[in-house]
Image 1 (cartoon, one colour):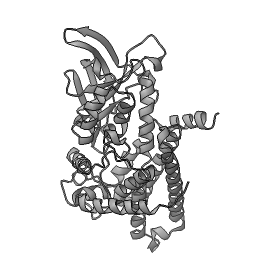
Image 2 (cartoon, helix red, strand yellow; image 1 turned 90 degrees about the horizontal axis):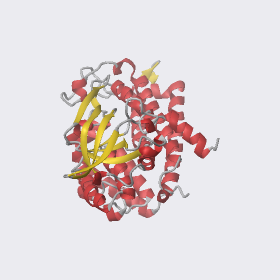
Image 3 (tube, rainbow, N blue to C red; image 1 turned 135 degrees about the horizontal axis):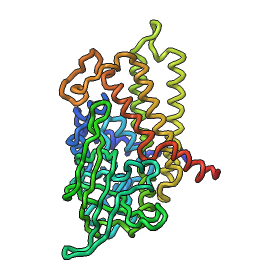
Image 4 (cartoon, rainbow, N blue to C red; image 1 turned 180 degrees about the horizontal axis):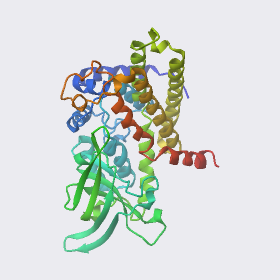
Length: 400
């Protein structure tokens, strides 16, 4: 694999940089670079800016509204977006359910849902985890019973999902449900697309330690779902779920964002002092920083290798990207807190939510870092816990 950019790749990078410099609102850039909380309106605003340019779904085939970019160009785009400090495009629609609909959905589902995902007309959330069915996802208990009446073929869904990210904003949820209880647990699961405005759905917030409302419980009480919202075949949902998780895990690596955070960490370490010298010159801290940077460079090369084989779809190597990517993200957040020390301790939600221009302490860069640290403990859990990913690596790559 040639690791040098071609002239056309460099020209493409310049095009992306010019666009981002002109199109990215400064207030969104400020929030991202300073670890402040983004609202739904912030995310939708940036999504629509990219959609108007035709760049919101780089990984999609051209016939569905994708860009036609090469894997290297997609990598350049993601890296430049991270470097500029753009909000992350919410992955649930563009990067997670859309590939499943493209691969397994009906022509009617593709024609209806994909344009609405591109335009952000629908905000999606993920209905996978349940109480008692997280890492052991196939143990899920939410049921969907098929019926036929005067209003047509349908399912009646009952059960509960949990840790559902941003469900309070969602218009749609892609949901794993049990449609057959008489077979092996992986074989009785189906994949449904459910309108979140349907009667019988209740969203209950889970408020985290940092007082942020990011995740939720979602309850289904005799929720009627048209049978036309079944993706693919009944009882084949486990296959579709694994396909989706492969796409999710590949994206979780987030090399570009980690490179931006590494630059931010170096800035912090250069301004903080230890024994009268910049912290970045401290041998112990510098060794941690150097080790982290080496790991990030290795991860980037692995991502490029995976992207070069993107036509084959995500395989078990996605688990490698997920584990290493999230390990690096967590270590970055740890070293940021270590660098600023007690200045990270004050908890200032009004500043994090943008209600004040400056934090209550005299350090706007340090104020959000402890909240950021706590929030990033989740990265080794979502998308399949890192412990489960190591099992997949052991079995499917190492053959043990």
